Length: 115
Length: 109
Image (tube, rainbow over all chains, first blue to last red; front, side, top):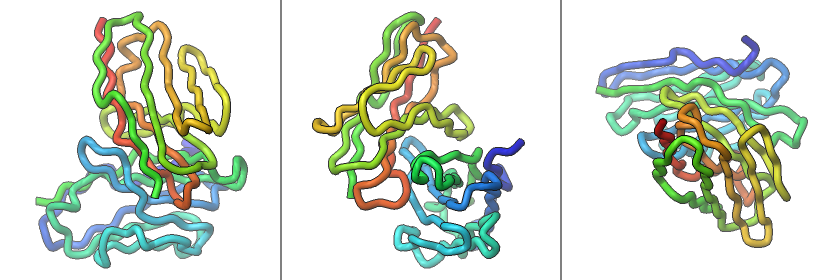
């Protein structure tokens, strides 16, 4: 499968714990995006990378959220000291220079439940 | 910040009916996307358009740049079309996609 993959698909954690999610984009895609989707809402943009550079991070929800893409390939999203309000689907997408990066391909998401 | 509004929020129709979902946005964009999301979360891109009209099978998407409005039509709807349809835009000052809340479509046999 050469699509975007995300791991784990589901994560259940207790409040206060740290969690880390991984996204592997389509191999030739140099842009990678993270989104969060809460129940009944459309996704909201969190951050994105072009290669290893994080070009936008002001939309991260708080300083408990951080993302990395150290080698310009896979990316991780970490949430520290999780809260119940962090329960959501975390989506990753990637895009390439073709179509001016406009078309994004989405992974299956990681569903986080904070107890 | 671009505001993306979709209507209706929920739509239930009978198999075979012609379906229309509407999307409006507040500021200029570089592209508008129609996406489909099935239960479980996976999002699939249906269309990306910046002008005019596109057709793929029973799906048709149109956009009016001057009116900042787009529509997604489904002809001869089928129960397998049941999903959440999401409108999203790029441009308008944002780097990532800005999404509408989605339209939950149910097609009954």
